[in-house]
Length: 150
Image (tube, rainbow, N blue to C red):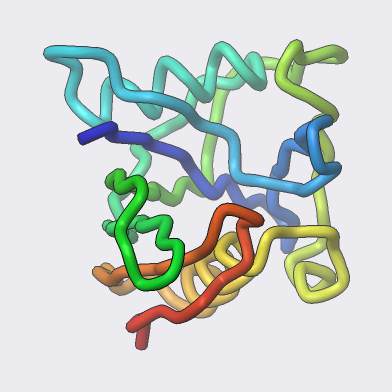
């Protein structure tokens, strides 16, 4: 099963997001966990590669089973480990090969172009600091079918 780690970095009421060119959706920076790498090592490495920033004490705040289904049949499944950080070191890259980086107002998340999965996750995690564990199910068009998040 594929493991992915990302981080919601917040500072002064803003959250750093990455606009992926394929669909033009904003996401929290991160990426695949390499074999024998911990999710903390992965999120730190991926975040620095994509943004140029070094996360200061990222904290795990979400563990999600992500499932793609078609006609009720599981097609693909992976685990998403989402961290949160409020402090960082370094300078933001002017250009990232992964897409456009931009600090967005936390209050504007609802108006951004996001997948529904990411909208649900970001909204829930920006509301508080408790660990959220859940499952999100979507189809091949990346439409959210249902979830069991609180």
